Length: 161
Image (cartoon, rainbow, N blue to C red; front, side):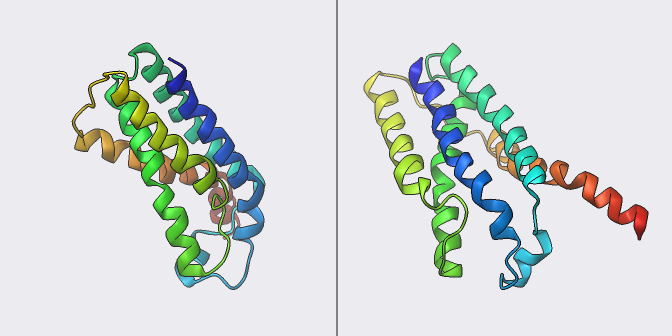
């Protein structure tokens, strides 16, 4: 099913923007205190976190393709991809500036997500009811990926500290 692989393609386009801009954005010195605790992020760390998240997106797309879009995993991932657009818009609104991912949010994330849901319904694909455990597991993918990406730096810091 092309629609399922479209999720991976849309995610790649969106995350290429994040990869290109996240390291320099994270180095800015005038970010609010909560952000300065989790940043800065090197290009290697960003690439690792994005790559790890990409594994989950590829698995979700494969599940969607194999089931004709019926997979709960695929549908929950599609929903999460669409809803996370709000975080990009909110971050930029709060900071009153560009944040990584903002450009492709209205150009790729929102239009693809809306189109995919319309297409699934038009094709008669039943929409799976929400599964809280699955949603929580998927919500943890990005923070876990970022934590794993930073482990080498944290280990170096502890070893030198």
